[in-house]
Image 1: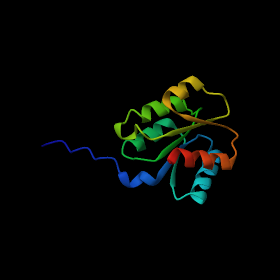
Image 2: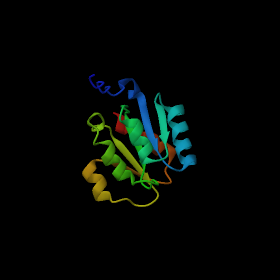
Image 3: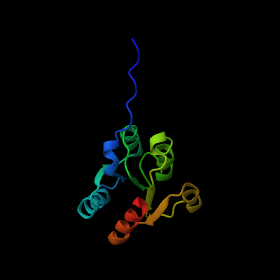
Image 4: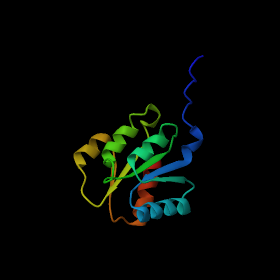
Length: 131
């Protein structure tokens, strides 16, 4: 018996923005804002490992990552997500209340937004990253 052929990423998910934040209130706020103000769907995850499991077969348009996740940093999650061939060009927005290593963000072309953030600034940044 031959092994099953791996499925290609589900390109139907291309209108999705993935939010990874372990703070449920912030994750819900971002999710609701995006859904109310854009035509995008949102997937909210609370850990990096949960996100990695789902993203092996999905193709979102944008990652919005918290820097301080319980199981890894947002930068580490960005690197692991971008190790998937089909996710290499998906832009990342990193958010944090602490200053992340800006040199590392610059090397990876990660956009940074400080918490607390202005909701209109968040929407503007999302729009900029998607165009």
